Image 1 (spheres, rainbow, N blue to C red):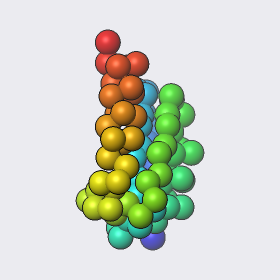
Image 2: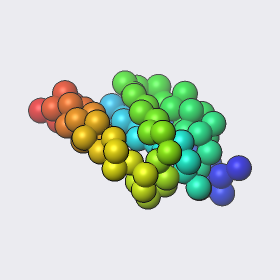
Image 3: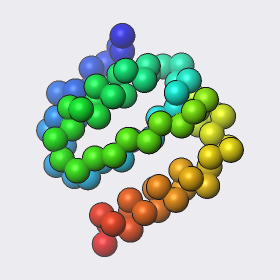
Length: 79
């Protein structure tokens, strides 16, 4: 259970939102990421990184993929 419930905030979002999450996040369980994702009503995308932690440790093998996702997201929405 998260200490802070951010769903009240996320359901008010009006800007496109990209969530990058690690499957081994030691602070936020995968189910919580999915719940937050579902609460967002605007354009959204979630990417789960196998063995990734909260501080991006373990993501180095998929770093290029994460950078590509972020770059494409920015290119699409920050024109």
